[in-house]
Image (cartoon, rainbow, N blue to C red; front, side, top):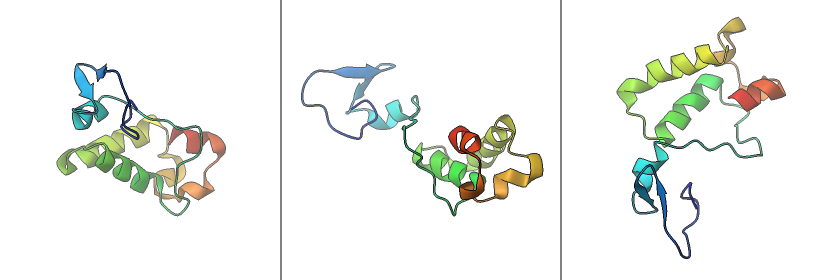
Length: 98
């Protein structure tokens, strides 16, 4: 319910003062979501995934490249140009990081 995937049946929840699900767009900008199962697309590169996730999170397009580049650096995906390789070729650890 806190991710907005399903509507609450009762009660009230807030994420940093934003009421769920009424202010879900604002709340989503403040939370992360890491499911147990791998949610990557084998044919997309790491860079394409990060652009997709940034779009879903509502990051304005003018900021995406800088944010994606920063995340690639922090995840150490610059080595051997891993950022531009298909995620299906990644080790389990790199898939999890991504």
